[in-house]
Picture 1 (cartoon, rainbow over the protein chains, first blue to last red):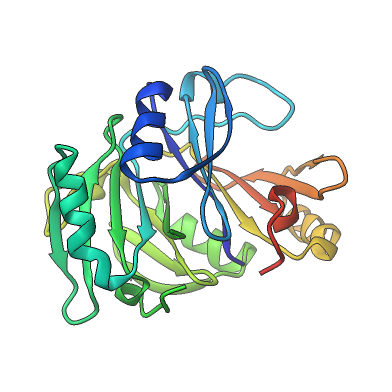
Picture 2 (picture 1 turned 30 degrees about the horizontal axis):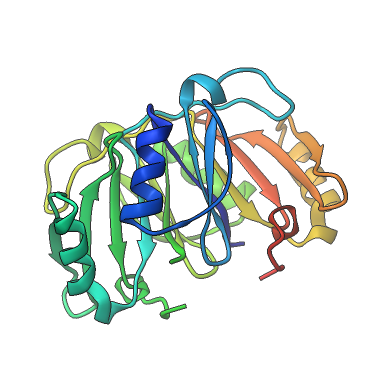
Length: 129
Length: 129
C-alpha cells in the first residue's frame, strides 16, 4: 500500500491556500469554500480540512483532526539549501536537522501551527522519487 | 514533491500496533515504547504518534495532532471486495462509497478513532502504483 491521502487540519483556509500554493508551490487540485483545499502531490493527495466542516455529517464519514499535526514532503537532497533560503525569505523560522549521513530535514510551521518537514527520501532509506 | 511522512495520532500504541500490523498487514519499521510506531509504506512512511509524547521537546520540533484524523491508503481496485470482507471479519464497521466510475472507497475507524480509507488511486485519477 502507498499513502493516497495525507491530511492536515487548518483553521483558516485562505491563509492555508496562500501558504501551500505560494510558499510551498503546490498545485491546487480542488477547493470548497469553508471546507477544504485539495493539493496534488506526486502520486498522492495532500488534503487540508477545516475541522469544523469535516466533522459535519456528509456523504462520506466525518472526521476532525486538529491543527498541530505533522507531515513531511520530499525534496531532492541537493535542494535542501535552496529550500531553506526560500522558506526564510518568506519569514519562516526553519529548524534544520541532520540524520547522520542520510540527509537533512527542514522543519517549519504552516499558518495553522502544523509542523511541516521537507526532506529527501534518503532519510528513510527511500529513493528520490 | 511527494508525501514522505503521513502521520496519525493514537492514544494506545499497543492497540494501534495490533491493528495496523495484523488487520491492515503493514510492515513495522521502528517503534519506541510510549512514543511512536513507524510503518513502511510503498515509497513513504506512516507514522503513528502518542500525542502526549510527540508534544514533548526533543531533538526535532514537537507536534501534537489529535486522534480523529484521516488518511487513505491505496489498494488495487480489484481487491476492494476482498478488503471489505477482511475488515468485516475483524469486526469493523465499513462504509463503502462509490466515486462514480472512478472506483470505491472503504471507510472504517482505527482503535483510536482515526477515520481510515482504503481506495484505488483511480479515485483521484492516479495510477495503481
